Amino acid sequence: MAEDKYNMKNPAVKRILQEVKEMQSNPSDDFMSLPLEENIFEWQFAISGPRDSEFEGGIYHGRIQLPAEYPFKPPSFMLLTPNGRFETQTKICLSISNHHPEHWQPSWSVRTALVALIAFMPTSPNGALGSLDYKKEERLKLTIKSRDAAPRFGTGERQTLMDEIHEYMLSKAPPIPEASSIQSEEQNKENENAGDEEIVPAPVLDPAAIGEVAEPVELNQQVRPLTRERPPPPMTRTQKAPADDRLFTWAAVGLTIAIVVLLLKKFMKANGHGAVFMDES
Image 1 (cartoon, one colour):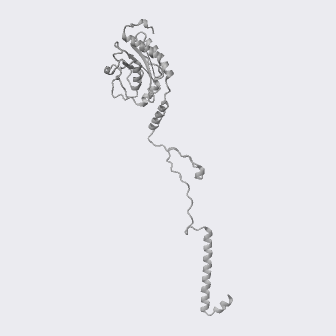
Image 2 (cartoon, helix red, strand yellow; image 1 turned 180 degrees about the vertical axis):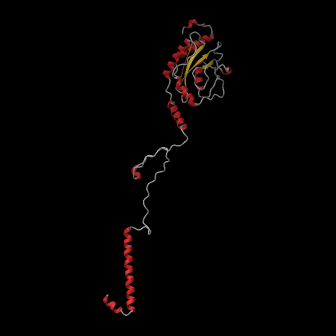
Image 3 (tube, helix red, strand yellow; image 1 turned 120 degrees about the horizontal axis):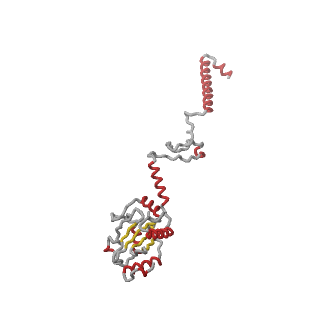
């Protein structure tokens, strides 16, 4: 950037050119910002989404307008990349912006403002001007889309500068850690909307434990809990084996014969034939 084309007696111009040199000599992985050649009071920038948030891995472009009284008056900020936290092409309300000049410090710089803007991204909007409160899932989708290309905005010089900044930021941007979770969450929602009927998964059956191969179970069929087959109860007096029944029969026959013999002896003794019977026995 040729300094001889600017009015170096202007304190704002001198300050801006100093910040440009500092920005180029000490680049950051979290942001990049440069002024237009035709108007050094207008800066194009891009910031990386803050880590450990739904914005991580995203690249968010914007525009900074410095006042003629800079650095004694604060700049204004405008986001150009849809992000779900700030409106696009609208001057946003921050403590470092021209909406709150009472908070601005002349010692602050464009670098200071960009660091603060990154810190503001995951905070609650609290109804501030130019703020949005999208759901986390919606912001994640915008984070993925933000990496595709720089937004279309302004003149050819602006667009060329934005494209250069985007390429630099893309080379420094970390991967989006929660990109896969979006697909899983969407899949879960589709499964929930597929039907209200609860599907019971078929259990894995072990033939060795059950004793036989189980028939396949349909997914929609109610599955009963598996239990081992109980052994038969032990024999009781009312449940006799066939061999015991035969022994009992022979014992009954022998007892009957003994009773008959006793009765026959009594009968013969009563009729005077007892002695003969005893001799023969």
